Image: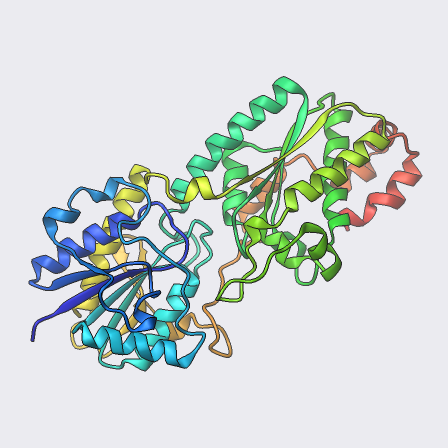
Length: 418
């Protein structure tokens, strides 16, 4: 039987996609398989259109691993939303005589891959996790590809902003991509040495108010000014938007959800809204200085991968074909899994282990705020801590900085450190 591999890329871009395509194509071709690349994610397959494809071979992919973006492009088309769309995808793959499917994407594309293993039992499926959000449920310490490149590019941007802030005595509020989790914001904040980083995980379950976010930022400004510094850079994960209450969501202007039911958080004006609120507080204290908002995310997604991601995605592409042809576990009947490399070895994670309760989506990996890494990150932030309120001399300095009495300061802000 002639083996045919189809490669589909879904979701947003991430550095390293082309490296996975290259490695998987080369390894499959060496086994004598035909390889076809599907353009624009599942967008055309779910309409029954099998013409939007390209043949992939070794000469055509051997040097694409250094480029950003995706030679197959990508889309957020969701065939799991309607049963008939998923059925058309199965039919389209069958008409193309596809025996093996490699999907590259984040949690949504992974969920689609998991549904295809059920809808098309004879199809062998492997999914390579891709997202700069780093929130696919891999083992702790194992990154999704593209995350480290995005963090490196984001760190350079923030480092430049930090120098500009110091030079001009201004504050920057930077919102970093991260639909649910704060991995990217925290990673950039740690590497750049930002003044403060706020992520959804630190607030526990439940909603977060704009008032609380502004209070945290304002007391960070107070603490910096009390120490003689009138500048700083705060980084916020865009996933904080999903935690806002209805009134605050309206305030930041959240646009309609996409096909997967996700709000387009990058289009919400979290940074601009917080900038106005923080600037108003600073003006009320009689302080000079400017607050500037900045959103980073799109400029990170299609960056050329750094060397570590180039190596990582080659390993992932190779491991994906190893998993698909059964050489990882000869005789295994398992036909659908997430490709994971841990400790230098392929350790596939069956889809059944990562689908959330209810079977509606893939579980999201959040930042573990209980580990030592987060404790270190937190210790280097300039933000109000319980010790600031216990130290009478420090409390007087903070209160005096914003023209309050110590008692007024405690009544107003003590809730932030409880």
